[in-house]
Length: 168
Image (tube, rainbow, N blue to C red):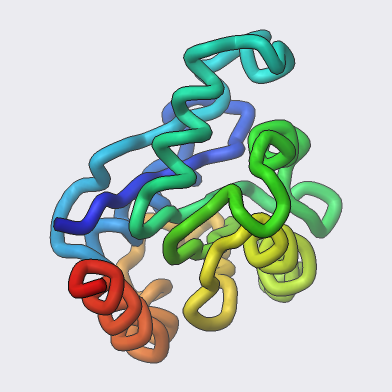
């Protein structure tokens, strides 16, 4: 059985970024994610390296078969909130599954942000990134057509990687 997690670094709880990440998880697996980590709801605990609840979330995310890491685009990069969470993963071994970088932004001007900023970090901490990072213009976050080209290109790879994890 495949476990799916969504990690959202938007400083606003229950954001459009969360809706987009959850939608993407459903499109890739056909089911709701098993774990949703809306980092905005963690408050100051995200800054406390001794916080047991945050440490447990890191463990659960790290052990998930598929993780959607989502962030709005701020200054052509992902948020500091997501950075705080990602810093908790050990380099090369923190993630064990498929990691999908998803970023939302106001215009196509920053469409390379997932590739240039988020993808390298996800691979550095052990994630297998199955294709290009996904960038969605914020105004289209709830339009399935905004995801279709990326899904057509990347879903087969994600499916194959997840099936390989189940059979190994």
